[in-house]
Each structure stands twice: as structure tokens, then as C-alpha cells.
Amino acid sequence: MNKFESLGVNSLVLKAISELGFETPTPIQEKVLPELLNGHRDLVALAQTGTGKTAAFGLPLAQLVNFNSKETQALILCPTRELCMQITRDLKSYTKFLQGANIVAIYGGASIETQTREIRKGAQIIVATPGRMVDMIDRKRVQLGKVSYVVLDEADEMLNMGFQEDLTTILSQTPGEKSTWLFSATMPNEVSRIAKKYMENPFEITVGNKNQGAENIEHLYYVVHARDKYKALKRIADFNPEIFAIVFCRTKMETQEVADWLIRDGYNADALHGDLSQAQRDHVMKRYRSRALQMLVATDVAARGIDVDDVTHVINYNLPDEAENYTHRSGRTARAGKSGVSIAIINTKEIGKIRMIERIIGKKFSKATIPVGFDVCEKQLFHLVNKVHNIEVNEQEISKYLPKIYEELKDLSKEELIKRFISEEFNRFLSYYKNAPDLNAEGGGHQEHGGANRGNIQRLFISLGRLDGLFEEELRTYINEKAGLGQPGATMVDVKNSFSFFSVDQKEVEKVQAAFQNELYNDRPVKIELSSGGGGFRGGEGRFGKKFKYGGGGGGGYAGKKKFKSYGNKEEGGGNGGRNKYKSYGKQEEGGGGGGNGDRNKYKSFGQQDDSGGRKDRFKKERGFNKKRR
Image 1 (tube, rainbow, N blue to C red):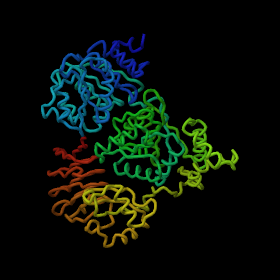
Image 2 (image 1 turned 60 degrees about the horizontal axis):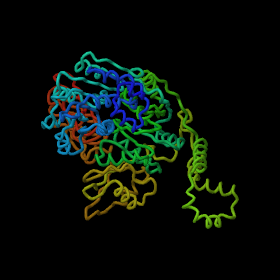
Image 3 (image 1 turned 135 degrees about the vertical axis):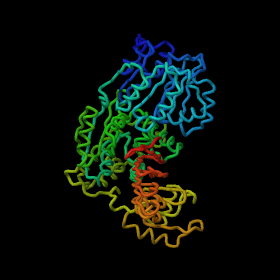
């Protein structure tokens, strides 16, 4: 008897999952399936991502839902579009042989009218992101009155992203008599409160310990000087020739910078962050899933819900702000019982953070050493040798070329031929790592080629943008050619509608400014100016209502009215200043629309966000905190 059959999976669902290659249930499936298939009860299941949670709730739904009816009977909520689509694909696979099954995905960034039509055909199971589902409820496009099963997948992630209010709105539309299944990788207090409020006597299943990472992940950390972080990333990638990694950065700007540096240095890499359009995100993920990319550089928000097999490494270019988020990051590798490596690149002041994460995940980190140049070259050389040794020869296609090849190379011995072939493929590594410095913090980590020493980088403003028909690559090429810049040239190009920012080496600034003196582009004067921080178009000085052009990084958006202070802290985009005679604090990392707009009362209001947009809370308390909702 098939092990899934012994757990209660029926023949039609069993046939579908057999085609998918399901043979042995994962630990969470083994614990959850009998409980859900044999009775209607609430469930709290805690397990690391990649342990088979989708099948743990998807297989029971495939059997419990009545597909002869067109009523919506099950609702699955998850934090991101990518995860929503992944769950929908999986459920369609599980119900492949069930007549009349209709599973519909509801998420932002796609036509709401198309999704509405799909629901009206009769969607027995809806998989949705909270924001779009609230929108559908407000428009009266969905009916949840007959829902018997609600699944909250990656509940901790939804709460981290600020969806608590949305979850309350959605759950209030469902019947009181229903089964609620909550799946989460960690169990913070907020998730526990959700369970107590919306569930009745739930049974709890834990695979591993609460908040614990997967057993088959090796956790490493490297200690380097802050200025050597990017060089360490490259050294790690070069030492692992078969690397297929996700690199996590803290902000969108840093994500794009690191991806740009990697692309410039010849790596197959790309960025995934909130400033990309949905079409761009889909394109990047398609390339990553097909392994056309070697490294995906991502923010936490953008990477949530990514379900890609065989990720070999997760690299924390920056440790997450919330230590619990390390569990989610590391869970992108070692999925479905496979092994993987989670790496943290830290400076000497961050050892304490590593110890805190160790306590939370119940795992020990091993301190690793950044390999020296000789070790990297040796690793790459033997990777190449093994690749040549094991390559499959297409005798039929190559045979017609061999006589001329043999004739051309007849004066070379076997040894000489091997040396020359290896040198052709390998000389760039030998050249790059010749006299390469020790990057470990104990070894000093001297400057090397790589462009990550930001102390020598100057950010510049240019009065051209998308409205001039220029995008990132076109603008980069235009600047490099006009100013005659060599490598790396203009980097970190950030194109807006009517203006843009870019960075060059400090020593190239005068050359760039001189090249654009009296320059016209489509009969429009081109202005190049120094940026004080690369932020908003007109950043406020932050005091007495004065403004200066093209600043932003230090300024904090439009200044406060009258003669009172306004504080804004940002890397990009404006934060609107305070009104009246009271202080207003706005903090944001990227995006427009004030990062915590000022309180109009005489109390302080704090707004914090990671992605574009801001919300204002008016609390009648001395301090009110609001966290951006996505």
C-alpha cells in the first residue's frame, strides 16, 4: 500500500500525486493528513518553509471540497503573488482527475475583471493575497458565506507585512462554523493571538522546534571589514562554481546596486525588489527558475513566496532587521528534504546578532574563512577539468569538423594542448586573483578591484529620464560614451520620469561634468549636478521651510511649514514634513509619498516603511507607530 493511501488519501488524488512523483510523505504531511482527513477541526501547524506544507493542506482540501457544487467552499490566504500562484498550480495538480474542480488565484498586479469572471464560473477553492481579497470583498465580487475551510499559509509572513487588519476583514466575512488551518514557519505572539481569536481548541503540530530552521541547512558566517563585503560575496561565489543562490539585501537601492555590480563583473545575476513592475518581476523569476541566473539579489518582501527547487546557497549580504526573518530566508534552500547552505557576511560588530539568531533557530553557526586567491583558482580549475572530463560528445555533429581541427593542432602534444585549453578558459581567474588580499577581518582586507568601496563613489543627478525615452541601459551607455568613461563607468543608474541618478568614481566627476557642459539631448539642455544623497527630486532642508534642488538623502522631503522642525530620514523619495508647531518624524528606505506624514495634533507620530507609500496614524497617545501595509 502506498504510504499516502495509508494516511487516507483517496484513489483519484493518489493517482495525481503519483504522477508528480510523491512517494513518501514529509514529516508534516504524515502528522497533518490523518487529522484533517478524518474530521473537521482547527489546526496550527509549525514547520519550516519547504517541508511540504502545501500538500499537507492541499490534499485534504482536494478530498473534502465538493466539486459538484459551484459554491466557494475553501479560501487560502498567503502573503505574496508568487506564493499564491505556486499554491494554485499545486492544487490544480492534486485535483487533476477530479471532475469540475476550479481553483482560482486572486492577487494584485493582474486584471481584477478577469479574476472576477473566473470566480463567477464557480470557484470551489480561492487562493488569494489579503490586499486583493479585501478589494474583491469591497466590490462585492466574492461570496464567502459558504466557506467551510480557511487556510492561513505563512501566517507569520502575512502579519510581518502588515496584513492583520485585512485578515480581520476577510475572516469576518466567513461563517462562524468553519475549519481554520494555520500554517507558519515561526510562532510570534501575533500569530498566537490570531489562533486564539479565530480558532476553537486547535490542535498543534510542530515539526522541529518553534522558530527552528530546517535540519539539513548548514549555517556559516564570514567576518569581514564592512568595505570588503561585496568582494567577499564575489569570493564566495567564485569558490562555489555551481552556486545557485539568493542574496538578501536590506533595501531596494542596495539590492539594485549589488545586482548591478555583479552583472558588471560578469556574473549571471539580477535584482528582485518592489520598484520593479510585475512584468519585470515575472521576467526575472522566469530566468531564475530556468537557471539562466546564477544569483538572485532580493529584498525580504520581494523574495517572500519564492518556491524554487535546488537553491544551493542563501547569502545574507545584510542580516535581517528582525532575527526571526532569518528562518524565512534560510528556508529558501534545503527544500523538500535536500541540503543547503545559509551564509551570513558580517562585520566584527555583528557577532552578537549571530548569537541571537542561534538562540532563536536552535542551531549553531560555524565561523568560516573567506578563501584566499590560490584556493579559489584551484577550485575553479578542477571544476573546469571535471566539466571537460564528463562532457557528452556529440560525435555525429562534431565529426565533420575534426579533420581540420586535427590538422590545425597537429604540432601540439597532448600535454601542451591541455595546458593551452585550460589557460584559454582560466587565465582571467589567474589574473584577477594574482596577489589577491586576505579578506577576513583578521587579515586586514585591503582594497581590491570590485567597486564596492563606497567612500570613493559620488552620486550625481542628471536631468534626463524615461520621458526622454531613456531607460537604465540606454542612459548608462549614453553617459559612458559621452564622458569617455572606462570600466566600471556609470553604475547604480536609477531612472525616474524626468530625471535620474547615477554613480561614478570620485576621480571621474570633473570629467563627467566637463563632458556635459552645453550638452543638448533632443534640443533640451542636459544638467549634471552633485547629489547630496541620491534621494528625492526636491528634498527639504528640514528647517524653516527652505528647499534645495536635487537633494533628498539628508533632507527628508518637503520642509515643515512656518518656522518649525520637520525630520525625514531616507535613502530615496520624499517624506512630507510636519505641520503646525509640532514635530513630525518620517522614516523610509525607498519610494515616494511621505514616509510617515506628520501628525496634525500635538503628539508625535512615527511612520516606518520599506516600500513605497506611507500611512498616517493619529493616535491619542504620546507616541503612535504605524508600519507600512503591503
